[in-house]
Length: 472
Image 1 (cartoon, rainbow, N blue to C red):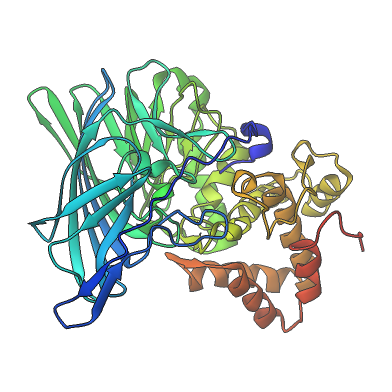
Image 2 (cartoon, rainbow, N blue to C red; image 1 turned 45 degrees about the vertical axis):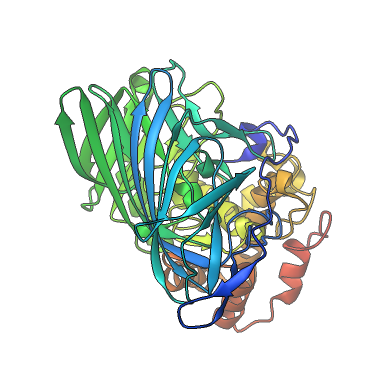
């Protein structure tokens, strides 16, 4: 996500995620072990009801049929998962839309709904380790969702009312497909979207096929690399859609609203330049494809690092592109285990902006650090409100400290260990946890291992300390 201090108004809206308790009864699986209902929430420190217990998803197969006129969606979700314990029922996060049918391994399954919890009860309990496929058929008019800080996400109709875009950080993905919507449960995706002839439907990953049948067109997108659900996207509209390759041969898909074409003329070439620079700094680009989605909706005034194709609400400047593409390493490939670890996403993406300036004849990172320290940078407002490693609440999880002060943490680390060790840490981090999840404890352990230093005081002061530290 870009710098929220300038791109999102902090309205303090209440979190809409609600939870209903699962059925408390238990029975036995076929191997005789006792089964119980999966938990309605993973227990994230900031979003305790996000995600669900009892299973891990390995693959989502989403088949969407969308009619922009009237904003109507008819869809099927096939969710392949592994039971992490014997379960008699399990929950999926799902908001709005009408569920028509649920099955588990092809057999009818009972379902009930309460708030944003869809509880599925298969005919018989599932044993630990069992691979099972849940199918949910649903339809209706997908809605926007207000996230904890008041920003709008979910399924959002675009400015001309003639298309839509789906954005999901931190809760919005549940507005358009049921799932285990917590960053720690990543999965592969196949997303097929059918739209009226003349429209383009863009999603994450690689375009496997594009077929025209009568008055409808179907776009089949595949993301084999694991993805957190908040990074999944679909954009439907009238775009200039191009398929090219970067200078290093990465497949690139750009979908740009026609109103933004003139201001986006340099985007295609800049993606190649940017990925080349970031790959040298952070390690190999972690995905098989890249690209951008540039569209606008009245309710959106932000960009988002949707996997492989960052979304921009208007033609982006280079600095914003540096930030969002850095997330392909930090956040998308290496995903936070909990939302309190999100400073690793935003701190690195913000520090990438500092490094870009330093490497392109502008401010050095030392100078940028000084500007943030002195409050002379536009993005420095509010950075001392709370420690970036410990956001106080869900409505502040993406406030200024998680961006600017988190970047300052990384710069202090760089000063403490030296450039060679620091960039060695960065590349080891993206390599060791490629396509996985990781947390702050693991990052600190890596820093101390690579540097051979006790860095406890540094992190205690800059990452976890209250208020503005004394400047050494």
